[in-house]
Each structure stands twice: as structure tokens, then as C-alpha cells.
Length: 154
Length: 142
Image (cartoon, rainbow over all chains, first blue to last red; front, side, top):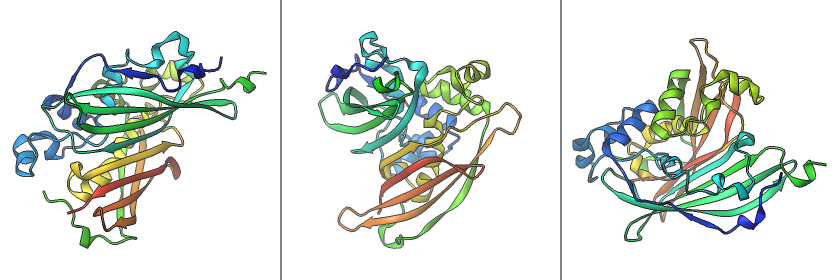
């Protein structure tokens, strides 16, 4: 079943503030096998000019899972079958580094849905900011819904 | 740890290839740390049932490993202002005590004098086959 194109342009704000925790950064850094002291040691991070440990470049991916319920993916009317989905592209734009202790708000926007052969592509963007509205990062993602394009069903 | 300086970087500079071994334990640990508990990243039975050759790595795990080549090269992960990839082929991780070996290398593609940034192109392969395409990071240099 094709994905509902009426969802293009819809915005999904995260229902809550994400507090970047020092120990969460540690867990993430160790999970990617990276013992960089800027991720693990507040003293090293402060000596390098940061207020606290720095988050790895892909760390903000955790927001998508923390606020998975605030996403079109879980809306039945969106028409996405998650078992058919693979990750297509991912891009992070850091307006500035993220450090432990910050409180972040985010919203996900459905930018585009289109056919690509038998598949459909869904492009989303997640804007991450401070509670006072200063931009922190933008995450662009595309997912591939395999074999669901309307003309692929005939 | 100082970031690499703009003046010491030239277009065409290469970053030596590094190998990253990806085993099931890494995927389990990454699933926990990231919150991505998708079953195809840890359950062989289900992965095969949905048509995959075996358990596959999280694309974001592969992206993170490739990113380590950039953050170590530049010397400061906070210097990465942009990082994007396309997931061109899944990284299959068999349960055989060896797993998969990801090989990542980089080349400085361009420099921006005004922004004092450099763009690094990354190649990421497993068994000689590209697993990431259009993998590119922009770093701000000292």
C-alpha cells in the first residue's frame, strides 16, 4: 500500500525536552568503540574549551528513538509498513557542538514522499534547538519503503 | 587536543585506511546505547525471514565507525559541522566469531578559505564492496 502523500509538510514536535546526559554520551561513545577523551572525560573537554563532554557527530540519532512515538512512522494513517523499510540516507548538520548538560527540543518534518521505481522514498528533517529557540542541529534522513509504490503493485 | 589547522591541510591529502571489526556484540551494545532495537540487527531467524542474508549492522553504526576516521584525523569531534552518507549496501554480520571487517579511508576533496573548512570524502567497504556512498564530512579547521 502506498504511503499517504497528504503527510508531506506535516510537523511532529517531540513531546518533551531531551536532556543530554554525560553518561549517555559515554555509553554511546563506548558502543561505537571510540574512547576519545573528549567524549568521556569532562576535564579534558573543559581544557579543550567545552563546558562538558562533547557528543559524537551521530549522537543526536538517539532523539529519533527517544521520541519515536512522536513520529509519522507510528501513525497508521501514514501507511508505512516498518518491516519493509530500510535506511536510505542520513545527514547531520551541526550548527554548533552538543555537550552534556544541554536541554534540547526537536521537531520532525516530512519534507517529501516520492516513488523511485517500485519503492517509495520518504525524506524527513529534524530540527534540534535549545528551549529558547537557538538552532543546534538539523538531521536529514530518507527511508526506503520497499515495493510499495502504487505502480509497483499492478 | 588541538584541531588540525587549515593551513596544514591540502586538497588531495589522504587519510590512511583503518579497519573496524563488526561483531554481534557491537550491534547489541549499539542497539542499547542508541535506542534502535530493530530485530533485524540481532535476530538471525527474523532477519532471514524478511529476506536478509543474515543479521545486518545498523546503518547508523557503520556511519558512526566511518565518522571515527574523520574525528580522529581532525582531532576534535566538535569540529565536524556536517556529516552525511547514503547506505548503499547492508553490512552482514554473521555469528562466526569473525563478524565483518569494515575498511574506511578518506581524501580531502575541497577546502573553503572563507569558512576555513575542509570536505573529506570517505570510502567504506566490506570485502571490497562499498557499503556507504556519497559519504562526506565537512570539518572546521583551526
